[in-house]
Length: 130
Image (cartoon, rainbow, N blue to C red; front, side, top):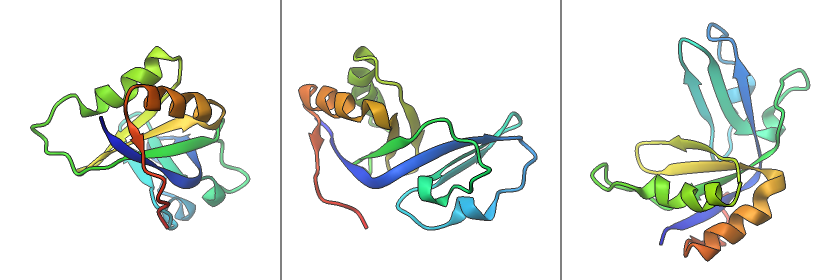
């Protein structure tokens, strides 16, 4: 069983060209921001409220934070969390940090996701993060 919390607000996932400079709006506050550059793309995950009108994000996402930290030697953590979602047809976008994992789920699947996680024995911590 894993404990997790839902971060407040909605999130956006934006894909940009790989050589695009990181825009200022991508680095504004919030509980969670992820900026990843590869040779193929620049991916930005941020609060939906940070997004300018001309930025393209097709979906609105909720963000679930697993209550870490988890040692690198502990295996199967993320799998145990996303498997019930996958088995119930819930799309996910997962991001790992040094200490923990974040799983984003399209807003329209939020209820279905929380129900599947509860049924799998994972526990939602209702305390809100600022």
